[in-house]
Image (tube, rainbow, N blue to C red; front, side, top):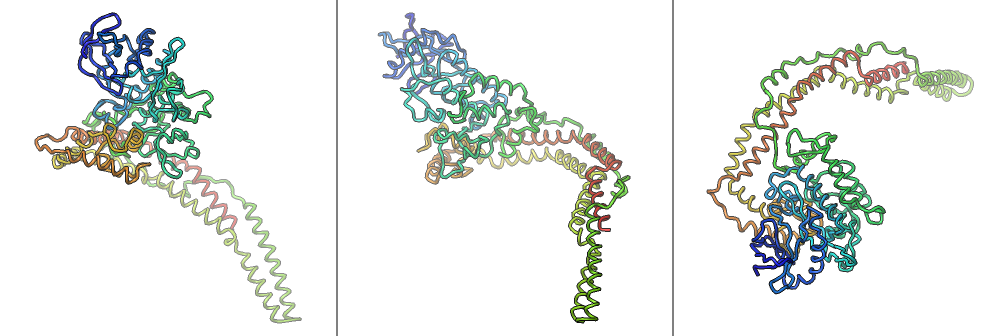
Length: 636
């Protein structure tokens, strides 16, 4: 059928298909550029007719700019209900294509970390606007959410929303388990009235995926016996990133942002959203709550000085995205480095570094002590001497008794007593053994503090730091040659690059793989398996729930993708690979230059510290010296 009739009798012509789904297809309308028509598949229209008619009558389409609500009903020339018109959503792509790092490279090639946060804000705003109309999304999941190249968000499939008109509630009859709250897992949706709080769970999952590189919040490694799939983990409240690790028995997959990277408010909000329902007396954070928190986070972002595609919480010490990319060995966003030309005069900087005078050798540490307090023997020293004196007196008495025994009773026992008493008395005269532990500890402490002081008060620390900066400058000078070598190496492995690009373009999420459904795909994505290339480069058996049998299925799919590859020698070296080399060199250059810029100030600070330490030794050094001298005085 190519012609349909609107409610006011206008004849509209259906054009090309914009998309298809399980319920129907969306078409262009020839007579208008800004509207589309959803036409239900045979047998589906009757089930949706009353809900769509109510939505049109209540003019929901004027109450939210974020949703493609029904605008008008459509019928066949014979009067049969067929579907509805809605605003045309052109140039938008699935939110899944945005939060998945693999698909983002091709579908959103300019998206950076700020883009993800702005999209999250707009998604939360969209859900808040839907709740304000009285609708509940119900089946909230990634397939019904579209994002533009300006981070604008639109929700489609609004005819599946739960909506109450008058005394009639039109329920949302379906749901995706990975976005369904624990209290509704396994429920019959045709018998359940959904609430905004149920939507708030699915919203939190989607926001988490946007902010955390497509990772599902319940995909992690279970620390108990066996493996848990995502549905079971949701039912058990096992948020994989939670600080309640002893309770959830879960740990997140490797190479993920930290839950605290976006600030305490957002971290606490995710904890609250994924807390078991019995422990949420006030419900989950609402869409409006998320809008406020995400905007607050956006307002305090700092732009990374090395890669401007990275934005992070301002009070974090260093860029977490740089750290994550370094550990992963690849870029997560299109790099936006500083210009490749040096941002400072390396020659002048080198001269300043080389000619800066080093601190002189420090004096003997003992002579740097200055006046010390008058030492007096400690109570331990006085006690040791009292014991020694008593022992000597007792020994002399014993010797006297021994002499008496020798002369009057027994020469043998008298001699034995004299010798024993003499030995005890002689040993008591030496206090070094008594204070051996204290003396050794004091000497070790003094040597350690002396070593630290000598390194900082003299040229040692300064020269080590100067050497570090000179090494960086040398590495900077080799970067052009390093880039040429890497680009030449690309030409030598053109076939391999074409193969890798071919395999990387085949995404697991879009493939039909035996026994690999939505939940398992989400688990694979959470462990960095997004394409056939990932499967060929790493073992899938390290992913929770993927034993040899499932791994065999997905590896067979990857091999089938590889078999379809055809090398074309006439194709130039992959521009993305070339750009990746240039970006990596630019990143290294930016990092080196950022470090070198600190050199003059850093070296001067080290020199000033050395000068101050020679004038006034640190308290730790004085305390260590004082302790040693006290023990030496006690020993006598």
